[in-house]
Length: 179
Image (cartoon, rainbow, N blue to C red; front, side, top):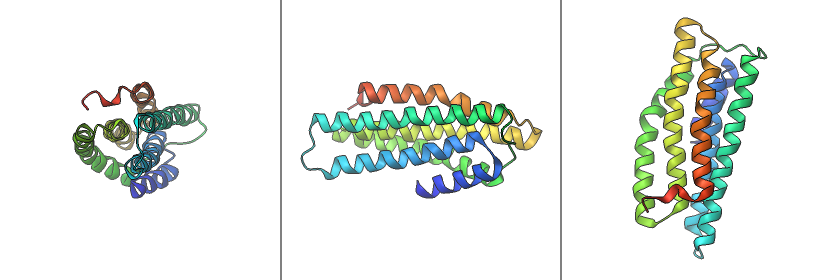
């Protein structure tokens, strides 16, 4: 995830891509969420309160990402930056679009076995990463092929409702429905 975030953010910086910035931001948040899950499993005194706190942290991180995606998109749509094609970003997003759904499924299975709301929230973030990759990929490809610079920030804005819904579910504790 650290490599994914680093490559995405570096590519986003070069291309001025809000969609790629949103994806890279998600990767950073997913990395922080994974750290929360690791903390949850390493603490021998885990109780329901610890689980709830871990899930809420993941939800707050998702809300932060939603705000980040809106600000980056608005900035690009208002002309503060020029969005350029990013071949490296396209390859990264294609890989993530294929790998992250599989990873999310594996995490959900483990969350069901362990009864962990924190791991279920982390699985939701992995699934979100996969959705984001497909949406961002569409924006980057259309921009690269047809030079529609507005498609990239529009793709980033399309990510926002998904991010907010997942964050709300994590904070409300509805992430472990199958546990």
